[in-house]
Image 1 (cartoon, rainbow, N blue to C red):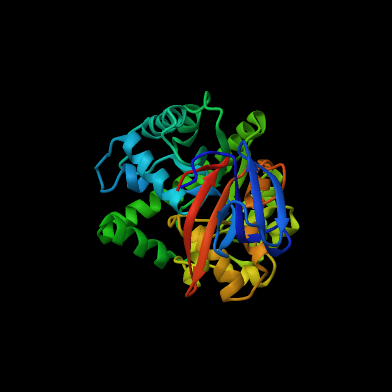
Image 2 (image 1 turned 60 degrees about the vertical axis):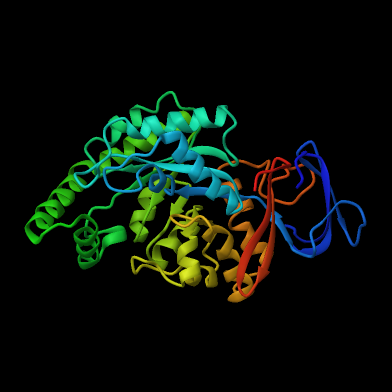
Length: 381
């Protein structure tokens, strides 16, 4: 096992920004100092496996499942963060933006202040060198919620917020334009009877009409003041995208239609879709497929969303399995492109002078297998 942050790797298939070549990489003090094509007798033998940049994850709510593994159950937050981090790192993710929810409704069982407590524990765990990946925050703001601004205000002293996303999960629009899908989702998930569901749905629609527009504008203003990247969530129409562009949105997360994805691209936004959507071949909500957007050259970034390993699996599906793009182009969707979208230009590419965030991957039987992960030149998985 390589423990130091200065070493050489040889006999690897290097996935460079524009090509895949056999060669070696030298790392000194956590930085890539040279990339050489051809054979070498020095260094760790990668046995012909792929060497790719460390994955950059900018949208995952995976932490919640460790912190609250069952309704009403809370795990020790440091232990939950460490378990989440271990799974993230073992999936090849070296930089992660952990999503925390802002704004609640009656189906949530989180108490006021729990998300802030989790954020504080993430900061503590990072400071104490407990974590393998590098962690930042992504605040998912439910703009139709009456208390979303109160939740956001609790984070005024957190300087590691990279993204704030604008979401509205009210029925009849965006992710849930099909009311039957919304009803099925909540009645199954929350065990509502027909009368309870009807009252809940009506409240959500009413709150969306009252709060969504003013909360979008208020949160966008906060982001501009603090230099935080703004993302929109589940845009479905060109009008949704036009509104987002006017607010300064840079990232279009999970557009639900080709129309919205096309408008986002034309408006200068980066289109983000889910790795699970790619791997499964379709959206779990019945919306547009990520493979369809890839075939139309409308896909810029992938996130693991709710399955960490999908962030590694999806690029190989798009390239080697479906042949929708080259492997360097597919790997960029989970490395260079997300890094660029959040202005972290010191990582995301096998390039001299950048951080040695790297993943050694064996690919057999259409499933990638991670052999080693390095962050800043230190092996973390």
